[in-house]
Amino acid sequence: MKPDRTANAERTTRETSIRAEVTVDGSGRTEIRTGVGFLDHLLESLARHARLDLTVEARGDLQVDDHHTAEDCALTLGEALDRALGERRGIARFGWAYAPLDESLARAVVDLSGRAYADVSLGLRRESIGGLSCENVPHVLRSLATAARLTLHVEVIKGANDHHRAEAAFKAVALALRQAVQITPFDDVPSTKGTLGKPRE
Image (cartoon, rainbow, N blue to C red):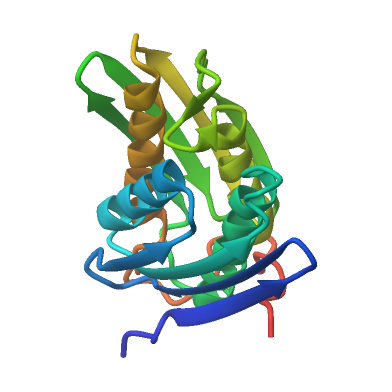
């Protein structure tokens, strides 16, 4: 019997109030409102190509800048994903993918290891895209990896347009994540340790 891999998470601080709900075995349906246009676009792309059903509702101190909202959306989404994966029994665990967007090409490798690590190299040059600071694009991926307790390597191999570079990176991550979360015929935890870390309550 297939597990119900759905979970939600909330994060409330003096800077932001975020709620995220994720269904791992979804169809790519999204309802995302962060107040930052390009962040919405990147999260929608992530969910669509990973086939996650994703809801993100955010209120943040955008009068300051976009940093707190971007970071806390990624942390809340990562926490929800971690909860939805549970003890990670029977999953493929690893995923890797290339994704092009016109002249841009990105590569991503995911390990649902229970260990948070991210090496992200996007080579963005613009100051911002659609209200999202370019320095926050890789920060979103790093924050997601931290909260989801996964290892992530992603790099943009080539590309001239920063919008294309960023979106290709998120699409590559989505495709790699879609592989990694797949249920296999095996009912064990895919680790020689026998555990991928204690799941969140």
